[in-house]
Amino acid sequence: MGKFKEALKDFQQVKRICPNDPDATKKLKECEKAVMKLKFEEAISVPESERRSVADSIDYRTIKVEPQYLGSKIEGDVVTLDFVKKMMDDFKNQKCLHKRYAFQIVLQMREMLQALPSLVDINVPDGSLLTVCGDVHGQFYDLINIFELNGLPSEENPYLFNGDFVDRGSFSVEVILTLFAFKCMCPSAIYLARGNHESKSMNKIYGFEGEVRSKLSETFVELFAEVFCYLPLAHVINQKVFVVHGGLFSVDGVKLSDIRAIDRFCEPPEEGLMCELLWSDPQPYPGRGPSKRGVGLSFGADVTRRFLQDNNLDLVVRSHEVKDEGYEIEHDGKLITVFSAPNYCDQMGNKGAFIRFEAPDLKPNIVTFSAVPHPDVKPMAYANNFLRMFQ
Image 1 (cartoon, rainbow, N blue to C red):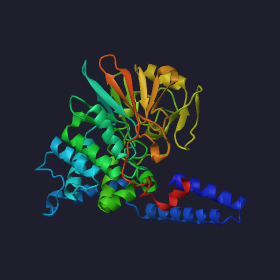
Image 2 (cartoon, helix red, strand yellow):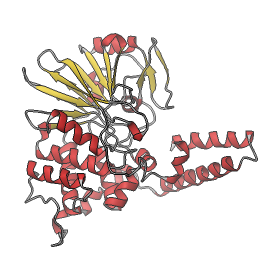
Image 3 (cartoon, rainbow, N blue to C red):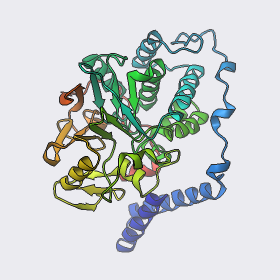
Image 4 (cartoon, rainbow, N blue to C red):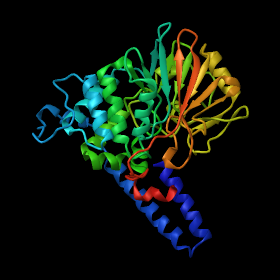
């Protein structure tokens, strides 16, 4: 809501400076309507403590699968590798997954994620690998390319996807169902962290909500919003590598125990530790500064160094920012940004990257890759028309 109010102030200022500009007048009216709509939704919303889970109203077993449906099917309650492979092939051919099986996957994920802490510890045995990927942003065909380059997720080939699975790209439903299905198939094959785009406000603006409504149903919009609130906020690999979507904090002295104690089962607040984990960015100079995004903050190498020292860690890995080469090493080698959506939004021309960590030394091995072709569906195809004016 705060972002919409800030946008309204900006448009009001533009209108005062250019009172006769028809484009400014139009955008101001659209913004006023959006703010009024959000105020109304807030006024009629049920308090969090009294809210009933949409999952309570869903029994996927009662949903009939039509005889003419020839797509992938889950036999019984177990998601298998054969099912996931068939589902990905169907998605590549722009076929849909039946709602019964989509509900089954998302509901199983809800139950699994609910039991996880806000900070998840990952143990990689000596001689084994873990692959960390950054933002995917609904670029399903590039996600498939990652698996072709690096192998499918499995207990022997685990992945950590570091948030922003959805929005902007127009195959977000395919991405999230694929990642969730692998997690259901084998929980230790894939780890998933929350990004700033796993939230209602961002999904409303940048396409995921509209895509879900178009490909699945309104009920799924509510269900995904709830399940996103269950995603962990950060991971630690072998007590040495801290992995988070955004970045570090506005105060020194934050311990891993403070992150574990965060009550994450909510929409991201506009300040505090949870907000900063999802939104903050590194800066090239020491200290802290205001965020270029208007949310979170910018932090320097000294902030990174103190956080690592305070928690006996070696490295911060984060995502959240597009990089020309798909990655960037900063802060005297103590911070790596990894971004896994090549040619972001079909226009940035950047490479994608992922990082392979092999135990016990956990030296980062960075692999870069280029974008692959995809069907002619434009990025933001399902986005809220109001926010197209911010593109």
